[in-house]
Length: 312
Image 1 (tube, rainbow, N blue to C red):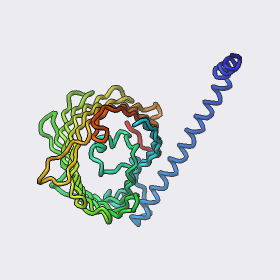
Image 2 (cartoon, rainbow, N blue to C red):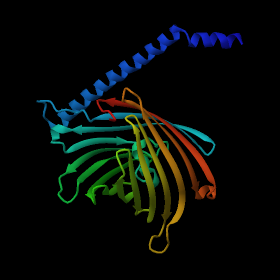
Image 3 (tube, helix red, strand yellow):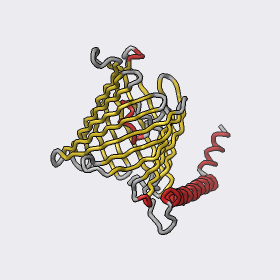
Image 4 (cartoon, rainbow, N blue to C red):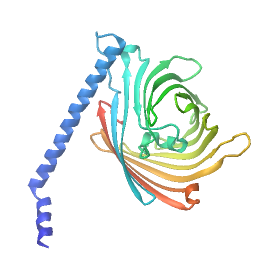
């Protein structure tokens, strides 16, 4: 009892508050230093690749995102750090960009959470140099070459096409087609068709369809999702999603078999400093591996952004 009282008094003492403030201030200053070094490094990289060491080009949109994830699933707890980065090279006339991501685009039903931190399952990192191609037919066209860090290491080339069409004042169609050629995994195709409906300033509804074809396995992976985005405050967002995912090894002769049903909520909160945010992602799912019995999972993520990039 005495120990509890002593600990309580210490936690409530000004000395403890001072030590916490001092520690937080130290973290803020260290993050600021690392961000400055990152910005300077991207500036020098832009100079080196472009061969132009004269003048200054802004790199405010470049960022490095470090995420720490903890996931509770199947009575297990897993920890996983992940790293994402985007480095624009404006002196190349904004045609080149370096990308690094932990997100693996081979997993269809994971694609809907790409921007919201559900990256606990480490399927390998993608590092690439992206070249933007001007094309009147598509909204955005790019060609990427790089490495996939997964045993065995894969070299890859990717062609990506994005088309955005405003169907009406509130409806928008977004099509995305990606063609991959891996040195080990061979040819793969990724197709995404989204229909977005803006309800008001706080809500947006999305119908998302994803199809993946893998030539080496001669298989298709298909996912259909209904999503509702809710903007609560300047620093709080919610996403509700319902997903059905399936696969087939012979698309011509067999219908896809459902592999997973999933209900998921993503809550994201951005701290006042705007370079730290966390996600809370509870999910209820039914998959074939568990005979479609209901199971739950919980994913907790904390992300730190380095650079001048802010979420809002």
